[in-house]
Length: 451
Ligand code: F0G
Image 1 (cartoon, rainbow, N blue to C red):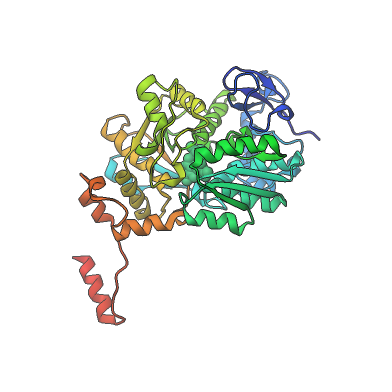
Image 2: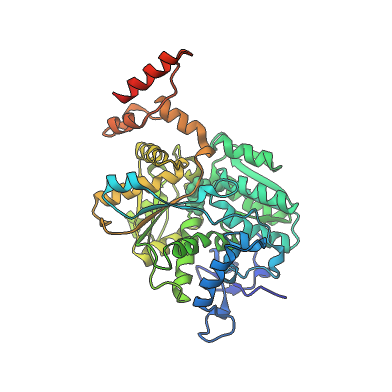
């Protein structure tokens, strides 16, 4: 059986090609822009391939109690909306997705919003949202007979790719910026058997080099320029809609790096809307770090119609990206949903990360930009107290333990970065204390905390 119903459409010029015709760099031969997966069978209102909303909602819920391998994946559970494989039996899964949606009571109270939630993509098998995209694109690589896959990465993509490649028995090459990624992520890539090259370049340099390498050798590119990655990464939109009983939240807030994820989630909600599974789209806002904010600048300067790369600098290394590949797609998502694009400082990120930690969840610094961004949007009056807001937490707190420890030791930020937030930052610090090994000393420490 051929489960494959897709083709690729160029996001820039609209040229359409089959999946097999895509170039190794996934750029359009006509205009150089990126592709998006589309499903022609969905166009015809009564066509045989157009999914039936009621039946799908029922089927997807039923699959949650199934023990079939594909049904246990939170990505392939929704496979009717990502028919990208010739045979779904080729899917490589680690049972990704089905991640929790948590209420954030403390942050909600502090911000005066009742309905504030975190969709924690850091609870995926390798600890980040990348797993949802990797199961999709790596399955395509396997089905098409590739032996080698590769990515440039700030860490999480490489960890995910290495794990899925190992499961599929494929070899993989990772290009990472020298010294600019969190150790936990590098350790994962090594553990899963990747060939890892640290290059004297930033993420953008690694990606442009890899783009040339894949033109020379039969290596399948697994960065988010690969449109199949985004097909997997759109599925958290389905999970969010399902969790709200197909009434979408008012607002979704997403971190922005290479901008594949915001593009994917926008596509996910758009498809749900077009297929009649939900009645409207949430606003989707993208938050960047102040030192890595090319899209924010683009919105300020030309309403998101042109992008000037920046030299990126932030301790949230996952989003230390100055020349994001999917900026046009993300810009379109922000515009079409009425969302915002803004940036937050290093101190705001550190504080928000500690606050997510204090909710008992934790996340990596790049994920915390969402809460920092929400605070800004609340201050600006952009989000009302009655609105339902979901923050997309992209990575697990264990990914970057050095950042967390430096924060609690008080060595993370320079004094000039803390200005205006000194007491709030200080109030969140919980450094480990050296205490004598006696009952009285430990109890005295507790007393000191209580006062
Ligand atoms: N949050 C985390 C934890 C990430 O790892 C990334 C991207 C992002 C947010 C931004 O997502 O690029 O789709 O806008 N990490 C990539 C990597 C670049 O190589 O792991 P984006």
